[in-house]
Image (cartoon, rainbow, N blue to C red; front, side, top):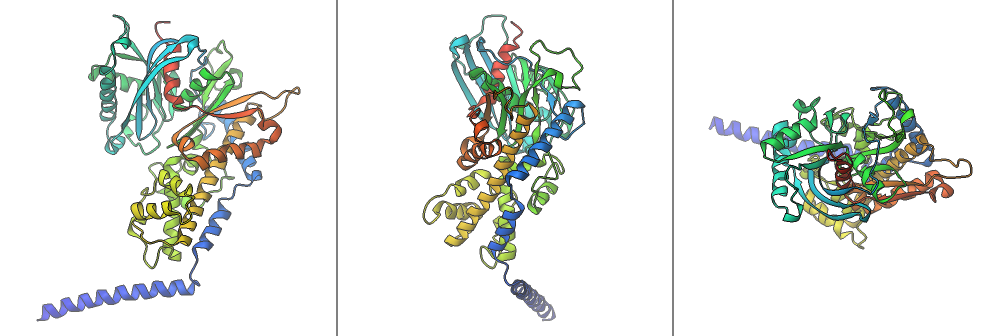
Length: 492
């Protein structure tokens, strides 16, 4: 009987404690005059504000960092990596070339048939998801998986793509992570981003690792060009339009590349290329400035990430993080302002459970009762029966975070225009500048895409805006890699 009495007492005590906690929480809310979700939303809007004046300060800071990064290695948070691409595609390229585009949680394998001035005669691709465990496993396991999929792709090709005896297949390798390029076909990994974390790979030549994996998988193929996805997008854009000078990726991650004058790269100690130009891979995701409108949500996300203190700009503007920032805001609203009732929905506590595609779908919901928002809250976060007013607040949170991100991206583009002198009228002439854009965020998030154009026009003014054009270079990074493999073929 004594044990039963003790057990009952323990259970009773736990019940009393739980009840007391609920009462305490209720009293705290009452003492705070029941903080309202609207209060937190208003505070968010103020902290995420991006007026033109602030964006121009950010653009100026970007330009300063670009100069510093070009002056010396390690001179800036912006790596300003020399790509060794000093000649972009001309349109004369011919033959069958391959591309491997590793840019995030998926990779693509492409086959492209080039027909000179007639353009791309044929192209096909396969897209493969990378199992999460391989993103944090070993370099051998990751590259063996990629090479095995490449082998499947080659094995399934038709007879018309068979190469003559003795001729080796050539591949452009788009590797969308910070790499210190040693030549057009070699480069060592500086660090991982986008959720990858394979420590043993840092400092290794990524082309050598892929080549060894292809040999293990029986794939007879040579990597002719190692390029970043942004450099590939620039090459793909230039193939179609001679006025393309800048490329920007807005997808899982974010980056930019542009054509720089060789004499404006003090850290370049080799002979100047005949073209007088060099493509620079900025690695702008690592940009940071005191002018960036960082919030508590950004700071905690960064602190809990795989790379704290790094990729701050990317964490504010790219697809991998936007949905997670929204989740953190909604969690605070649920916890402090009872947005979803007296208890915090358990699923809302799970990091990265709310992805940017769901955020985009909610942001784009135009139904009278915001049915899409309600369904996503129910299906993803298991929050049923939300009111229309609650759904409206969720949409506003999505709008604030997306708008801040895209306006910051536009400020980054303005920084590049300033650095290259394409933001002013010279000798009564304005250089025509076409910017090749790619990435799932830009392609699929309609509000985001429209806001990039509108913000850039706002920053440069109506007159200059007439001479600046953004184009969607669909799959530009993959096609561009194949084009660069062609222009750097061993058989030329």
